Image 1 (cartoon, rainbow, N blue to C red):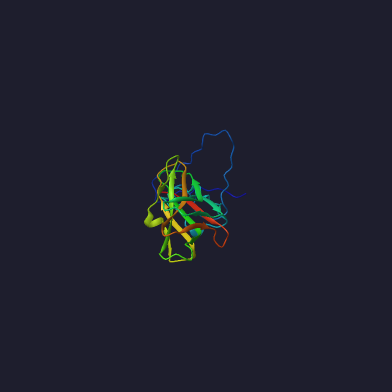
Image 2 (spheres, one colour; image 1 turned 90 degrees about the vertical axis):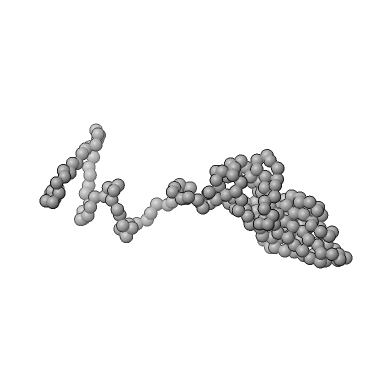
Length: 213
């Protein structure tokens, strides 16, 4: 039969006390068959001593991170276009709803697809059209995001043109109400007929990602 020996330290003056818990159940503590130290919550364990498979981590349960986590991703797409000859900003059919989980969250909005303009072969002046992201919070009204950062413009002198569409914007809505992002367009000059049309993958889309603040 192997034995258990408790040996004191000749240089120490303290008393090591082994206390039993308040339990009515018989339990057995099995010591490892190897030399080493018993770890406590005050111990330091080198990462080189870790082995085996670690458990799967759920990103939503991470703590101690100041921000930058992607909390949710929402996408909407359409394969049909929206046409307009309006000189004022008008909504297209590219729209998306997302509800942030915190007022400190940011929302990264990405719009992609294509845009098509037609002025006719008889046009003699430059034709211009623009695209812009608008936002609505809850039941409020739509308002444009900063045009210098979210707008895209196409310009040509006559006939038609097709251009790939890509608009990206990092928004700070500061709300936990539903937020609606919609692509708007307008004719800025000439007799432009402007359309948002599908791209080579047969769709235009909006993607919104909530980023932890």
